[in-house]
Image 1 (cartoon, helix red, strand yellow):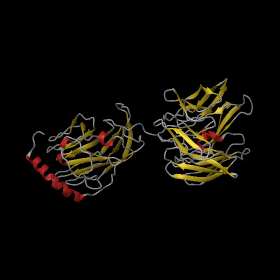
Image 2: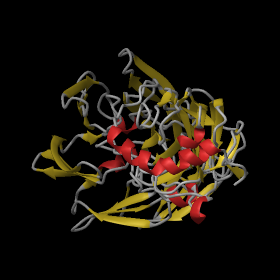
Image 3: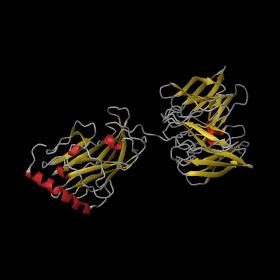
Image 4: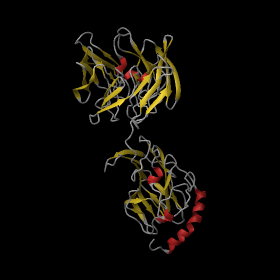
Length: 519
């Protein structure tokens, strides 16, 4: 362990007693700094880094808990499991200063309660002034026992055992790294497999009288837990990022929606009449799908009836006319809210078709000439600019040619599938761009916008109704069908692990809400 000063020996001997006394001095303060999140590129690993920082200073009080205690960081938008990798979790202390760093103990507690002692008993009498350093399993060495250390990356290090971090800290319920008593705990052994989303706590304690310090720039948490998940909120009535099994049932002349919300539980709602078209979308921009129908009528007599999830009020929008297809609803103006929209097919062979939407920003009606009689609409955001594009599929012999009018990338065309396919657009590869996709009697063909390859899956059989959506909440559309029967059953293939899941919901003659986005 190298040379120890007399003062160091005395402080080490006194530490257990002072540590017990410190337990009576606990107080808790909430972090007051600004939390910021950013993506870090740097040296790309198998999974990208996400960096979170709480820049509020941490005052290391003499022989007491720090202020604040704990200092918190909230991580969100990550994959739900930390991988077993040496650099999956790292902590950086920004501007560490102390007049006797040997006194300081630091423990990290994750959102699930897993706890790792990061530093305890490192250094000695030499002062440390404004040093920024990182603790990581990939560090080349441990922190030194009797000397100060420069900026760099070090392994978690402990030269003491049994130091207790008073409530709300973990006490002694934490994993201990080396070199003390053969400790072997690491970030990987402590946090791998746990969910990184939630509040991370950094507890700092000075265990011995006579010295104090600060971490002037707060601390940084780096997590390599996979790409940020951007929820799709497809048929997501409770806003948890997962598609909810939902069916619409005709009861007398009225429609009743039966919804199994994945977080908020079962829900039933009478909405619409049997001749309405179901058009569930997020019209009010609260990341929850709104129950909605379109009721055809003559010009100036067709209406959208929307039950807004944000305030449970009716929003009525006069739009469209008999013969229009309202299933093309979506966000055409890029404001994060679905716009009332219709596709009006040309009335005769070769006649032009038109797309119309009413902007949720200013109420203006926008019309676009795209397609012709006999085409199938295939709406979606194919260029990833946050606005729906105009896309149609046209028979070309036995095949289909799709014509794109993208709001950013312009016009293009692509041969894909055959004219009898059901068009099932969705973001199947999770790159925030709609993928062209088709269903053919139980086989799914998906043209991935990320890389241009075609994925082929088998799910469903003739007579099933397509019901694609993000059922597992991983930010990717899952292939899915609903099979009529007593009971009816939803089947979906989880894109997260390839497992086919089933959920009994509905009965004969119901209609799956997710079917609205099939053509």
